[in-house]
Length: 290
Image (cartoon, rainbow, N blue to C red; front, top):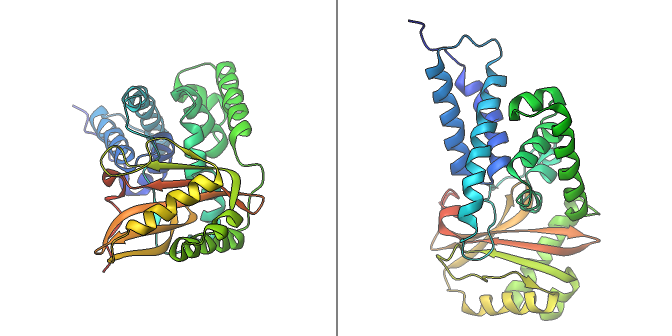
């Protein structure tokens, strides 16, 4: 009987997680898919010439199947569904920021939610991970011509919905600082100077904590929403800057425990989208304050 192939797991795990997280928008689900791909590889007993390619194929197919089921579950999700955030307390390296600014941002992952599992897989494999169409076709089990069509539809949708003007890191940091200052000072006029008139707020509490169950539209309504929240904050609440999916953001703590993660999209030097994630299941991986 052939012995299971020994695969250098630690070497490939970051790459496989990068694929799975972008596919699913969930840290825990991505880790599960990566682990399942590894288990299946071990059980197959095949001699692998290209283990990373084999594992990437397994992860992608598992994620596509998982997405088909997840989309059904999300139809009954309470309030807007947002990805589980990747939170860091230190600024990512420059080369990682370049990558993350697009394919890891919450705004981008939210756009991907409107793609079919096949469109999402083909787009990510082709545009982010730079697979050839022949390689993509083999992974998703479609023809190269079909993959080109899927990629074109995905690109058209993403181009239509992605921010048209990107801000510099310095501008993002500055606007986040201004926004936080407006919150702490209750500055209504200040809010209106940093928020785009047609800004949108998405708040994900998952029905488990208080959150806006529908997107909030317009700078005035968003400002009043945050001012109302600040009036109810407990004295032991603390807010610290952080990097949320590679973008400048904030993390709120109560008694040292994380309560929410927050980041924004910026266009034309104004905040156009705001993402607040306070579903306890999605912020449980944020370390508490020491």
